[in-house]
Length: 405
Image (tube, rainbow, N blue to C red):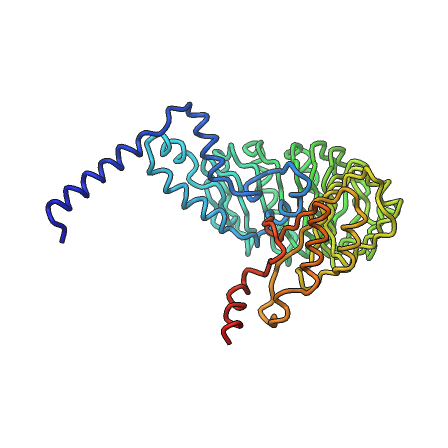
C-alpha cells in the first residue's frame, strides 16, 4: 500500500515523464519518417534489392519461405513502443500496421497500405479466393509457394495473381517456389508483360525453359534440375546463383555449363550453393569474370589453379560450410593468393551431436592471425564479425559446464 507522500511522488514523476515524452525535437515530418524507418529497418527481408555485392548471399537467403522472421517481429515490438512516445510518432508509425504478410489463395485477403512483402501460399484443392491488391501501392516483394503435385493448380494461381498486375506496379522482387513442377511458359510471358521492372528473380522449380527478357533485372537465383535458358537475356544482370542440381559437376560457362543469361564480364556476384559443383579458378576464369567482387562456394570445391591479376576486384569469399567442414588449407591458400581479398564468411550451423573437441578447431587461431595480418576480416553466416576466440554461440554455455565437471 502506498503512503500519501509516496503517491504524490509517483504522480509527480508520472507527469514529468509524460511531459518529457512530448518534447521531441521540432524536426520536419519527412525527417522523422527517415529516422524511424532507419530504427525499424529489417535487413534484406523487406528490401527489394541490395547495394553491396558482399550482401548477395544474405539477400537471396532472405527470400526463402524458411527465412527466420524474428528480426521482423522484434521490429514490430519496437514499433509499438515508439508509438507511445508522442502523437506525431504515433501518426507516422500507424500508417504501416503490417509490412510483411503471409496469405493463402484459399482464404484470400485484402492487402492493406504499407505492406512491403507478401508471401503467397498456393491452394490445396483448386478453390481460389482472390487477394485484393487495390491498396498495395508499397508492395515491392512477392513470394509464391506452390504445390508440386499439380502443375495446373500452380498455373491457375499465377493467372489469378497476374490479373491484379495493374495494382502491383511497385513489385521489384519475385520468388517462385515449386520444387518439382516446371515453370509454366505463360508465367514467363506475364513476367515480361506485367513485371518488366523486376530487379530480382528467384526461381525454384523442376524445369526451366522458354524465352524471357527483363531489361532491369540485376539479381537471379536459379534452382532447377533441368534448364534450357539459352533464350533468356538480362542486360543489367550483375548477381547470379545456381542452387542444388542446377549444374553438372563443374562451373564452366564458356561451354554453356551453365549458360549465363547476361554479360559475364559485368558479373559482380557469383554463388554456387551446390555440394557437388566445383569451380576451377584458372586464367580463363579470371579473365572472363573481370568484375567479380563476391564468390560463394564450398571451400573443398574451390580449386585455385592460377592467381588472379593484381587488380582483380574479388574482395569477399563466402565459404558455405560450417567451421567443422572447412578446408583450412584451401582457405589459407586463398587468403595468401587472392590479392584484394578483404572478407571471408563461413556458415555457423551447429550439430546437436557435437563433441567437446568439435567446439574449437585447432587450426582456427592460426588461420585467423594469418588473415588479420593481411587485413582480412571474418564473418559468420548472419553477417556478424568473428574473432580469434570465437566459438559457436550455442556451445559457449556447454564449455562452462564442461570446465566444472
